[in-house]
Amino acid sequence: MNYSIAVVPGDGIGPEVTAPALEVLDAFGDAYGIVFKYVELEAGGKAIDSTGEPLPKETLETAKQCDALLLGAVGGPRWETLPGRLRPERALLGLRAGLGVFANLRPAVLLPQLRSACPVKDEALIAGNSEGKPGFDLLIVRELTGGIYFGERGRSADGNSAWDTETYSRAEIERVLRTGFAAAASRRKKLCVVDKANVLESSRLWREVAQEAAKDHPDIETSYLYVDNAAMQLIRAPGQFDVIVTSNLFGDILSDEASVLTGSIGMLASASLGSPTDPLAKNGRPMGMYEPIHGSAPDIAGQDIANPLAAILSTAMLLRYSFGLEKEAAAVEAAVNAVLDAGLRTRDIASRGSGGATEKIVGTKAMGEAVLKALETAPAAI
Image (cartoon, rainbow, N blue to C red; front, side, top):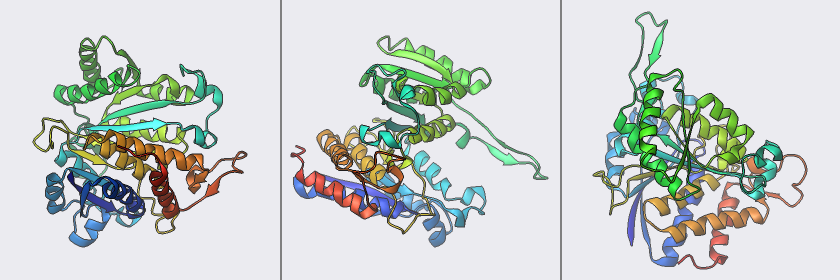
């Protein structure tokens, strides 16, 4: 098997966490005769420095020819004074739109090894959890190529007012809902649509379309929450949620909130998927863009302290969704669990307060090497 992967290491800690993620992929390639061809591309701040724009045309066009894209992180304070159209973050929006990846899957799971890193009490983690013990396992499905991030925007001539427009079409809502219902069907069959239908007209359309779609999925328990209530419920009882489907803006905010509950934003991977019928789809599988949800963290860049686990877990999602390599994806996740079981922690997931006596704080490279070792000693993936 041969696969081509576009790689955008990006800015800040992006290159540091991307390197061990690629080593994990190489480990599978060497063991099972899978050839991964990496095509390194520039986007974000690095691209601005070299080309004057956050997303060079060559980067997007080359990425379209690959089977998947793995991204580290983009952005940093050195580019914050640039006009909006030239900010590094525009590269993310351009890649998402250009690759047609409209559904962002962000799993948030409280691993038992990281319970002490979660800031909420046991009572909250037990509430709503059918298993009756502290923990949660939820998936946020965020619409990715519509809404306020892609709507019309501008400033008045005198610069004293500005606007950003939230716009959604029925088709955009329907397709991300299909992704959400499919995910719920393979999990615990619960789906919560998050909107602000009591205030926003665009949210009223979201709810109307969702209520129509729910009729086609009678086996899925479908519920609805306003986004402010959803934010509260995530803290009060995260275990009540299975799959959350929501808009671009709301999904961006809620998934970062959920990341804190897992112990660290450095633990959350993501997959951004297109349609399996899109022209960019390969072998009936959707185009996929994979990235840890953390930012570029320029304050710790180059210090070998960034957590690479979210980037490594993003490769598991890449193996699963873009290449259909489920056993290999599960092996990556098992290796991460094994490393955590052994007590290894990067600084961000170290215990807060008591209970950390058996933990060992390691750096980015050492954590990546530990995952590789766990893969070598684990049972064969295939």
